[in-house]
Length: 98
Image (cartoon, rainbow, N blue to C red; front, side):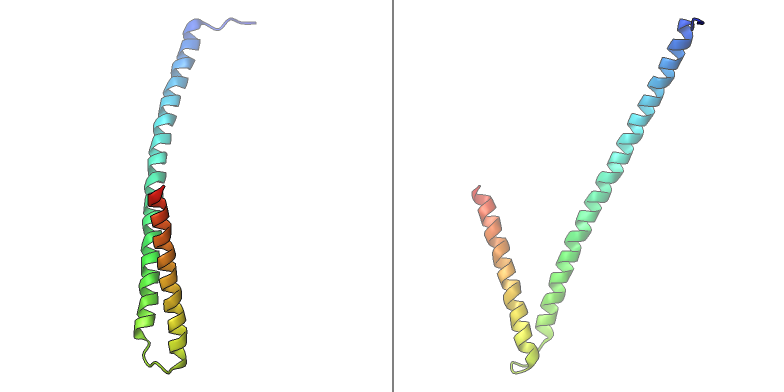
């Protein structure tokens, strides 16, 4: 068995330390990228939800004629939308009480 000089071991340790630091920095950069993408995704989801609500309200607003068959559908949609808003408000109130 041949003895490895201490200087060679020290070189390898230093090399491993440099690699470790590089990987830690890269990991931090990647984590920052993931965080930014998740934030962007959440913003897009919220925007989609808002746009869906606007579409729903526009559908309701664009329908005219109280006696048309569409009006009963619109009333049901409006009632469901209002009920959904009420549930969300109740949920928010419950969370505020905690």
